[in-house]
Image (cartoon, rainbow over all chains, first blue to last red; front, side, top):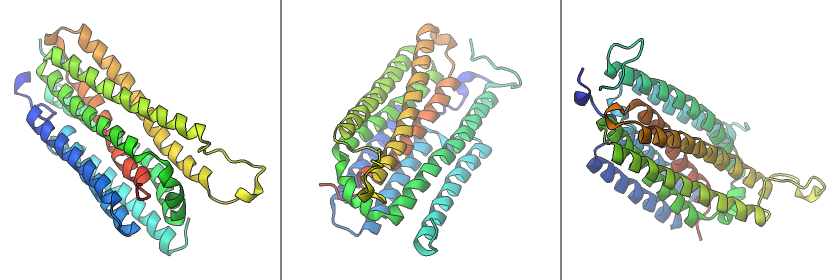
Length: 100
Length: 212
């Protein structure tokens, strides 16, 4: 296989610049929202949603994940999903079931 | 000369795929490691929200915002370095690797400055065992969490800097035609992951209390 015809596992300068701008804008949004007077639950939910969005952007474009082999994508997806389930169950346990 | 295909692979694409799969498997384990730390965070945040309201404002969210920008910029230069490694543009590869290192070092310098200030003000995880009035969770609990979470993250950044220094040296010594993309890609994946961890730590710690 000719090396130069291989898929390069990194974004072009244009795509990387766009993602960088989006990440900086989302950072500004997180800080801006934190300054607003909202209930603590809304604060945590919006901050973590924005963080997850930023993480997804980094994984999708900088880390080239959507174009990796199926096994690689599955591995990353399972890791993220299991972590989310773990954190959700810990929260439910402490909040409502008296655990911790 | 094309990048060398090593045993047991028959072509470069498979070899690169295997490096990517191996790296993601390692990152999956790192998710487990930081996941446990985030469970500690969640447990404390849900059970003792008052700690975050009381001591959260002692963290410098303005400095942390600058640190976030530094890490985001370093992920940008790292992504470009991977591209230049695969297209074998040696000058730009060395430049982007050096830029990534400088931004990472700037992050650690700011972190160190922050730590020095907290320690100087007595904002530490250290508990005075003779002080019976201070029983129960308090400032030491909050700063214990803060130092454990940010400390392990900073160690990961430090590890990344060592790997980047090795890559830069290798790129410097290797003729453009012999440059290998996979090692740069592997370090890049690790670097982006460490950036992602910070993207969660930043709001979780610095923006937990309403910034003032």
